[in-house]
Image (cartoon, rainbow, N blue to C red):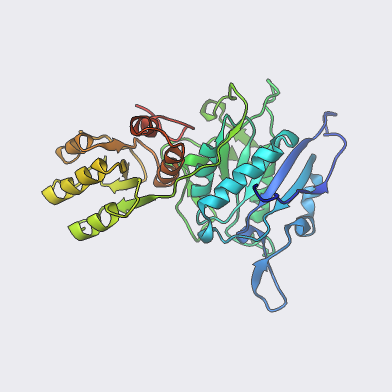
Length: 363
């Protein structure tokens, strides 16, 4: 039997919104990270009990929504996040899905893009907002970005379309600084500035200025079926980043790992790779053993186009799958998800080329 999940704690309620309608209800899931840190008596940053957030942010009382907070039993530094944590988050959202209009996941920034991508796959037919956010500076500091990020993420999680009255953003997304990005398109690009995340190959879903301006053309449509929460990921995967001078010994050591099932191959430019006989032999042997090879460009912008140049024309014949314009973060989590479905090899390969949750733009 799965372990009993922690229960939400109500931190504020409203009877009515300003327009007289019932207020939106939002569940904040605190996993850890800088956003929830405070200073102890020795001046050290430590995780706070997040139920105390209203003391740090009294402006929350002005939000016309019902808020609950659920903290994981132990705060996780995002560098320690594992696939098991993604499955737990998916399960928490699934078990609370009927009770809330939207969800905000507070997460450390270092691996937030990986977690957002993983949740996008695990939550099939998602019809409500799941907004990841965090901070570069703890909420207890004067020049923190935590307040702005959290307030705006809550606004987005509760937002409804002014004309249709439907959910505004029915997908996993990531809000940071002033951009709302599709979760499986995000990449952390900055460690010292507030604009920590970008989406190079897909436009933002919204921009936050005086108001939050949504770009409805870029947002996924409401699903046609009920939410399905997946609970299987296969972590027998690796990322192999090519570089000039990479040796056969290194490539063989990685692709020859016992039990390996998938590899994200980070290639040059539009998907180019060495044509040295030993390199081609390594790929051929790995594919023959059942390892799925997904080709992703090292460039932040652009896409993989296998066959455009001679140095990529051979890859398709060796069983390498072109990843189009997918990010490395979305590619490795997609491998885990698709392999976790336990499908035959041909169907697995087909799904890896298929746009599952808006993670690639098919040409």
